[in-house]
Amino acid sequence: MRIAVTGSIATDHLMVFPGRFAEQLLKEQLERVSLSFLADRLEVRRGGVGANIAFGLGLLGLDPVLVGAAGVDFAEYGAWLRAGGVDTAEVRVSATLHTARFVCTTDQDQNQIATFYAGAMAEASMIDLAAVTARTGKPRLVLVGADDPGAMLRHTATAHRLGIPVAADPSQQLARLDRDEARQLVDGARWLFTNEYEAALLLDRTGWTEQHLLDRVGSWITTLGEGGVSLAGSGAKALRIAAVPADRIADPTGAGDGFRSGFLAGTAWGCTPEQSARLGCALATTVLESVGTQEYKLTPSDLVARIDRTYGPETARALEPRLAPVS
Image (cartoon, rainbow, N blue to C red; front, side, top):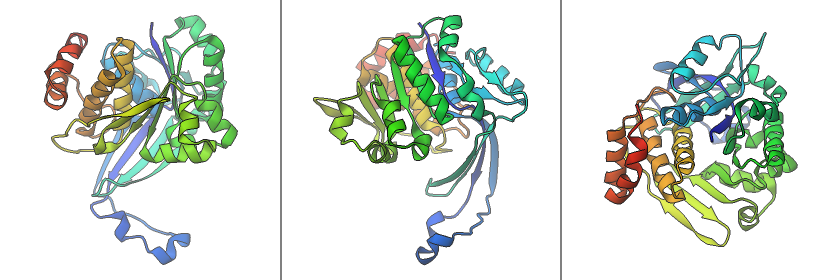
């Protein structure tokens, strides 16, 4: 069975500031910030967490169904996704609005300041996940990624009602959620994804303790940047997976989405959570070494070599047969 990926579809405008944000911020003036950073590089790339994760799954041969809303300018982007193995038939295309925009500036310490314009994403709540599954077949998993909050809540409730396991990935939308909404999105999830900052924010938003939250989800996966990944579950000691070293860091945007693609592919193949996380880390590093969230190339030999160097030949041999068909 396939994976349905719900979440934002966007265009990324990625800029690089050659200095440090921290050197421009005056502690005594933080209540009245008025700053302009002169960037020396601009890249316009395809993005959005739903599209990014689906793209990675498509390259790995999972034939994912992308469920989201795009704008009147989606034709070229849609063709790109389909060429990458993504089913875009269930994308709602707005008749009037443009595809969402993500504008991000990264400084030399890899800190980021970003703004997101929703655009057509505002129509995502009009999508009926039950109707999607009736047309495409019941998926093995629904990932609920950052999207219009109403859409995220609706998709989560529908998946639970239909008995489809949920991977909850609220990420950037946590800041907009109230307590009841945050609880609804994560309660009962098979997998819960956050980064380290989002993990603390999620506890604040839900009002739950870490143990209370662990009791309500299957596994909580927290990405830790160069520190790797933590896999936690109720009643078990958290497992730490080391990151795959990068040869160079070109752009951190989308690395977390790459991890999710690799992890979800591993679970779909029946791999253990530990093996799936190692594949996710290898894919995240591949994304990290490329500018843009969907500009990377996947080759079986490269992925297997990265996994072998970091985790040893046993893990590499276990994943190699699954990666062999990747083109």
